[in-house]
Image 1 (cartoon, rainbow, N blue to C red):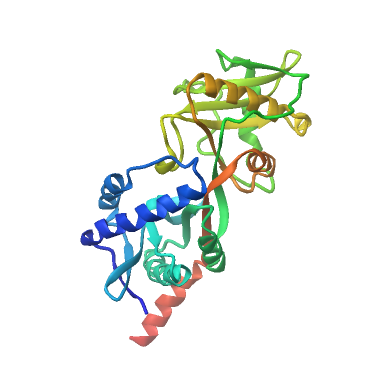
Image 2: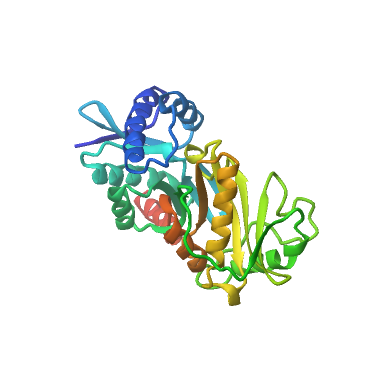
Length: 324
């Protein structure tokens, strides 16, 4: 039997120890995950979250799990959403893990729905098969993934295109515009953040971003944009990361090896610039980009989302009114 309580400040140290052991177990399966001083870093993160809704699970007086909200949004993908997307914001012992998560989510989701957050998003390590099945059973579906790869050579790639590292974004302005308007199409149906503005000062080459473009004769047909020391999840960030920030190929140039050619060029640049790994994050429903990443990278983090019928809040209010 488990006792589920509200997460409190005096639970932080035990929670950090629990997550530290878990993090090392994940790294043992995927050594590309960066080494971290978890016992030093995680308590500070949990201290910032402790005032958020959160639960702690106990068995015979010992902490066996915890789950804390990392934030919320009034309009994420058009829905009021509660998040638990920091990887260290939840954890549980392996023994009866699925049941512990079921009970923790039962308690935390009651708070979220009570606060009218009917959409819930959670991130977790992709090599945790127990959690994958537990969240699937609870009604979650994947929205995003984060992937890593070593700097091993890539075989193949189209030799009929010229790959250039750009000094100006001018050659790919129109290609980047196509990239922006690609996302709302099926089956992705994703609305990019912000309106597209080809004249904005902070363009694709801003913020230490480098761009590699593939040219068929003089026409740009695909590009990768990259940035050092960057990731979505802070636990995956490292000074030797090279992140692929964006990638796009014109429809008629897909499946011709151009992505491999660009990836090979990016790997060579990463080696020259003392990086250890490539990182990329993407939408799971992006079938063209996603299929490419899955083929050449290793999934490390999955983000999953559940949407609850918003009428449940009205129904609960009616039921409570009848009881009174």
